[in-house]
Amino acid sequence: MSPLSQIALLCALWCKAAFLVCGTEGQSGAEPEVATALGRLRGTQTNVKGTDKLVNVFLGIPFAKAPLGPLRFSPPEPPEPWTGLRDATSHPPLCPQDLSMLKTAEKNFKEKHLAFQTSEDCLYLSVYSPAGSSKKDKLPVMVWIHGGNFIFGGSARYDGSALSAYENVVVVIIQYRLGLLGYFNTGDEHARGNWAYLDQVAALRWIQGNIEHFGGDPASVTLFGVSAGSCSVFAHVLSPLSKGLFHKAISESGIIIPPSKNLDHAMDLEKIASIFQCETSSSLSLLNCLRKQEAEHIVHKSKEISFLPLVLDGVFLNKPPEEILAAKEFNAVPFMIGVTNNEFGWNIRSTSKIKSLREIGDRKSIASTVEVFLPMIDVPSDFLPMILDEYVGDTEDPAELRDGFLDLLGDMAIVMPAIRALNYHRESGAPTYFFEFQHRASAYWDSKPAYVKADHGDEVGFVFGGPFLAGDIQLRSEVTEEEKNLSRTLMKYWANFARNGNPNGEGLVEWPSYNLNEEYLQINLQQKKDRKLKEKKVEFWKKVILEKTNKKSTQNKKFKLEL
Image (cartoon, rainbow, N blue to C red; front, side):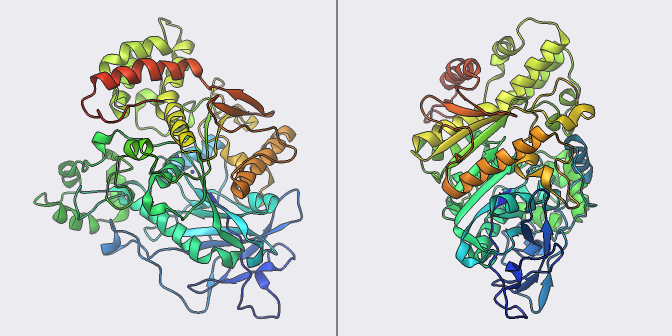
């Protein structure tokens, strides 16, 4: 489940006339040019609704070689330079994926896009920068890492022009390998895995070497992402490889702290070999066999394969997250973390392969589904009755069972990991902020069940200034005046954080830092400060489940699992 990066465009040094083309003010549709370390680019200039500020847009800039042939299941390599003027006016193809999932998401969020295309040659990024900006402006850079359950999504789903225009920031949207192509590992030196994260690191290195050409400040890079993109942001907070490549971070509905016992396990290689009819004599023979498969075939067949989207590869991640967090060895940058008040309302469930998630059943069905999830959070199954009692009690009312079940799923998968990460990060002394998004978009009146509140990822269209986009991509086109104001508010909070490491600013409700009082901001049509989100549930998981799990666990005696 979606990465904005603020990159400011440095006006082209090699322009035809005696002026800087990419900084030129003028009509939408102009063709700005910029010179990068690898060659010159020609982009487009666009407008947004509600302001006369123009934005220079450069789409499909390569930050790595195409991961084809021997580069499949390998670290990305730097791209080749080019001669002449490279066209950067079209969205790049998405990385290989099942496009039906993106279409479902498009329907859920009521978005509109151009037709999506896929290709394994997909390691590109796109840059949105205020027209007229130059190297001396040193604009903050906001790098968006898209979500999509680690298996779908891409830059062509987003448009950074409104956020760039209204908040005078450079927005960078990156792509990375997905699914088996992005996360396959053999558990040995032949394929260590974490390819998707290495792609993201390559994009961040490109930004360090080139963003000033677009007016952006390489010393002020903020990562932000949603869902799987949010988990990716947190992975960079953990990774020593990402140190110095970014300076602030925003995770929206996704924190990944997998059980340590799973991190160094190879995938089920025998099952993979059977599915793709490969030899099983060695991991190398399997790897070579998979490199010969068509990308579309891998996407289709990998629906039968589960994978852990973060492993100990000794390169991107060399210690379990629990150890890194406990020892305060992470990148202690200013960090904003957020959740919604109905994480499993509809969006996640509608794209799930698990029928009992898509169609909520009776108490027995709910119990069976929860039992499947417990090992993923390292909780023994004998705690199941206690957990069900806490969330659904003895009710037989279908609506109460449904709401309790969805609340439980959201807490297990997203809310409680977020609070754990907040507490660890707070202890580092770095600025830490927390929010709960609570607004159900008015556009959902006919596309989601009435019981769904603020769903997973619902804030994203407002953060991107969806109501003000004027191009082919529509993220929040059906809005009320109050929702337009909400979008302006979120853009200000996010951009302020990117500028200063603090979301507060003139005309905004005060957003308290997440301190020992666990203060946070409720984000709705009106904002409000509060403290101790879900205090009762936090205490349940902390004092009952996690402490009892610690006593019973023989897997992780060194580190206490606590919120």
